[in-house]
Image (tube, rainbow over the protein chains, first blue to last red):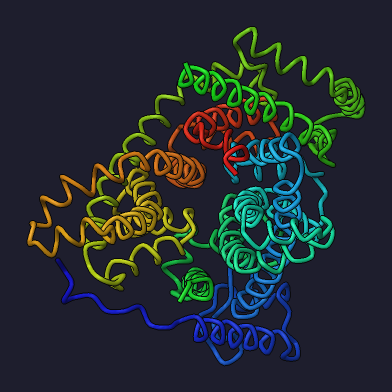
Length: 271
Length: 285
């Protein structure tokens, strides 16, 4: 059916990776320019269109949109990468230990994972974010948001690692190692390297998922606090109809966010 | 007998998970650093005496045992506790919104399944994954739900059902496409194709029956995705459903309401997603 119309998806992983690095370098370059600050206000140019001074215009408070988008990109990417690394490490530890521990302990650990998985992410995030102190600083709110993402993100990954580790436990080389008299500690040293092919995709898949979760939380007013820029808070600009009629640069954050998420998807795609 | 035992084990496990979610959420909320702070304390209209009373009220509700007994007491009384914000039983707030949210979820999941299944059937029949089918779903997955809903309002096309359908269908399509693509590679289907059986006949007689048992996993995936998209969609489109209620409760620190809604979501996900295979996966290893 449609065979004639199909074409192979090109090898996009290296291109996506290098594009992301290039974007990060540009963002760092924008922030490194003298006199640029994500919270600095130009009160004479509120909602300004693109100009030499503000290449992507300014927001309703006169803050440079290009600088804020660059800062939001670096903040969300840095936070998501760290949260993803923490979630993957936790998942690797719990998944592997559960698979190689006695049955009751393994079942108990997976029951704990199911408890986490029974709650949709956003509700858990909203619940924890809403119980933070009223005077939480923006930097703390950013750290807490990504910490919560790591805390709620590990169980799904742990389940995948658990299944992979169980497969390893049944594998022939493992039986051979046990038969040869290797101790558990010696065997465990070979388990994690064999799970790398599972852990790296999990790590890469978590990054865009965390970026989207942060953007959704921010768009609901429960994300990173102002004046720190975040994708979510910049998406809130789309609710401001007069601003939309004034300048099309308001769409820059959403366009860039989609591009970045597509690039991450490209990096995570199996060839 | 084995089937009944499996079913009983599944029900026991599901109930245990729901119970653990309830206890875990309460513990999480109680030990969150801002649990004892009250938004009313920052309101300049309240005098010092009122603030002292608010602090005393917060201190009284600090005991975890008291919180748990209040929560389970609310369940046994059938009212889910009392809302801090509206001072009415939580059930009174939840009940009228259940129908709104349920209707929205059912419509979106039904549309999403139809859309994803049709697209996946056509797409998977090709030899390689086609860009023209994969690109739209990849693009849809890269747009945050809140942004998609806002863009729908700005372009004055579509509503909550369309956004939820697209969000759910995009992920369902990826899942179905992979599943159907594997099904097409079965040796007996290759043989049937080589003998010249029509695609339509192969789909009805072989493909759909072979993937039907795995659709349970798709149901879980759809429900989890739909529930995750619920809050942004209901908030942006001002739909008076459970998602909007949960968001309002989160913004106003109305924890009994937030816990009540979270429990309903947990029950929905748990009952949809806990298939008996999970309980026996360790033993099967």
